[in-house]
Length: 125
Image 1 (spheres, one colour):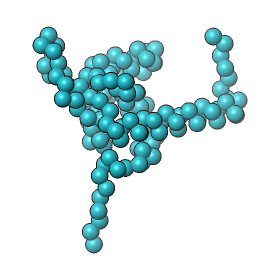
Image 2 (tube, rainbow, N blue to C red):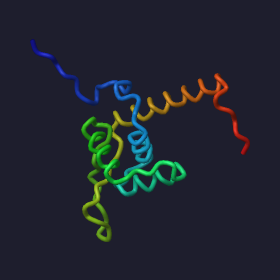
Image 3 (cartoon, rainbow, N blue to C red):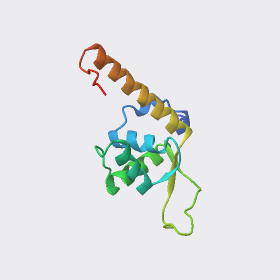
Image 4 (cartoon, helix red, strand yellow):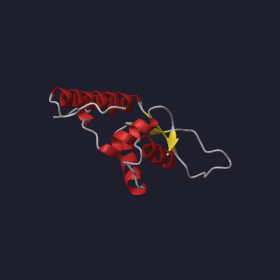
């Protein structure tokens, strides 16, 4: 009996949920453009106000998993002459874009439920 495997890009975004915190923030970081690993680390730290700090080991382990699952892809872009030539740039794949959207909706639904349950209160600005 043979079993036909679907292509990774044909997979449902729901199969990947929930994402780990690190994976979620890595995908968010490259949602608006290509970045190299160190740029992703800096962006995550900045956009979370320093509450999430990805170490190099965590970052590259997660990127390898995201590459394997076809959620990100390495960009053909290469560093400028004055940059480190070892740098690799990463971008969302079409599947990765669908997955990050599904995860954002899942989290928004959880926040909505927290509001209904009066767990989350509005903080005056």
